[in-house]
Amino acid sequence: MRRQVGYALALAALLAVPWVIGPYAVATVSRILVFAVLAMSVNLLTGITGLPTLGQSAYFGVGAYTGALTAIHLTDLGPAQVVIAALAGAVAAALTGPVAVRARGVPFLMITLAIGEIAYSAAGRLDTITRGTDGLSGIPPVVAAPGLAPTVNEGLVYYYVLAVFLVLFAVIALLLRSPLGLTLRGLRDNEARLTAVGYHTTRYALAAYVIAGAIAGAAGSLWASAQRFVAPGDLGFEVAALALLAVIIGGVGSMWGACLGAAVVILTRDYIGGNLSGHGPLLLGVLFVLAVYLLPRGISGGVRQWRRPGAKREVAA
Amino acid sequence: MTAPATRDLSPSAAAIELDGLTRHFGSLRAVDGVSLAVQQGSRHAVIGPNGAGKSTLFAMIAGTLPATAGRVALHGEDVTAMPEHRRAMQGLVRTFQHSSLFLRCTALENVALAVQRQQGTQWSMVRPLRRRRAVLERSHELLEGIGLADRSEALAGALSHGERRQLEVAVALGTDPSVLLLDEPAAGMSAAETARFKQMVLELPREITVMLVEHDLDLVFGLAEQVTVMHLGQHLLTGTPSEVRASEDVQQAYLGAEDTSDLFPQEAR
Image 1 (cartoon, rainbow over the protein chains, first blue to last red):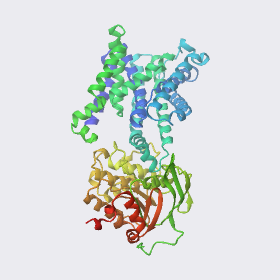
Image 2: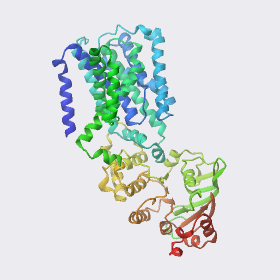
Image 3: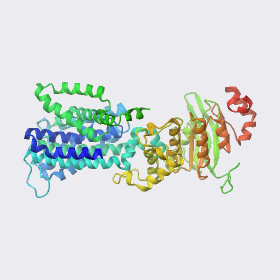
Image 4: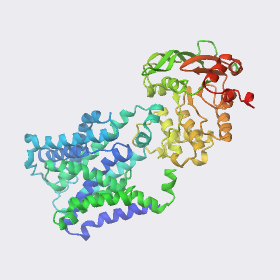
């Protein structure tokens, strides 16, 4: 019940955003929502399946370029771009994932980091597709639904991003409650036992990887629609690291936590950091240390403990 | 043998057949050429002093460890090259010596993981687990069977040691196994918990062949119809509990390793 109230309040606040703050701030909130989708894809791997990743920026980038190119050459219809970008992210993850999902823990983290770095340098070099370091501009304004006018107004772009965000949030919530969601949590908790009851665990790890790739790809398409510009920097190491940071701050394994973490990270980097003459990264570092010390289970873990003080001890026992 | 007459107990009806099963760790022969037939529907225990190779033998039967040499057959089919998850799908399922559970999942979810795999819904991404009656009913039934019905929503990590040992078995049963391998199921259980556990195994349907490694010899002799004694990786003998108690070889094996009081408690008293 409390949870429903929380979601209702969050939704009301999100819907009110363009009415209460200025266009620049609205654009920041749009970025937060996009980044929240990316953080959820990182969380699906890191928090749910137990595979800490620094490679989701690669599929985010694949989605961003695919979305941008779709918008330029194919259709300015947003949902179509999201679907195509998600498919591209999934395909990219299916092609690269088999290398990664053989590993676990730190080796997995290193392989995904390498995948992210390869994607970053590929984006800079594949001039004919990505226009290299110049970046891809000239992305037409997104059409949110068939029959609507192209969305130029910051507030309307925000509502488009919000709508897609909500759909993806719901899809992920459904996935987590599904049998496959339980399978992935089982993989995180005890892979040896999951094998012993008859699961070919690598296949499920790859499935999680592909789904997370699709979500990251969808986020990339939203990024292209909101920024109307894509450059290699959008899929650099910083993006991957910030997404993982958002998940850790928000509380590993919690989807709304990951979204809050994304808000904290983007606000710190783009808003507060901007007023600190470029010391945003320093502030993020301090934030990370504080989060790890004060809220080892992140914001969501802190909230849970505050509501049920005995819960943490019970789990640790 | 005290198996009910309804079972087909012809010699060919072995649930598990081992042929020269061997495992080396470097120069150590942990299991050395063990041949053994476990009759379908029987309750078969493997005992032996520490380091006799019991757990290694179990790991090879389940497929957790590959065999260095030899063969494992399940219901007459050679499964030596089959990976562990495939053997589990064929009905050969193990438990672990140290409770091996999904600690951040609830007790119900632990069992549901096994049940949904058995029912083939583990890939589904749409309908929530909470609305899947077939999986839930079977899972609740299994939890009831082990006496954890009222703990279904507790996280496995919050259960007591004895409760975890019971849940351990329920997870294995959730796969609907034809052969259940119990690796030291009573380790660390209180006397009351062991008694309860024994009752639970006795009540298992006879379609399930139960093979267990166990140190608690009261439990072994109370449960098993056939007892295999291992010593230094080798198969010493297999017989009924009374044959095993009477065997001089067995006494010697235990004498060689330590005192016999754990095997023959009545002598120690």
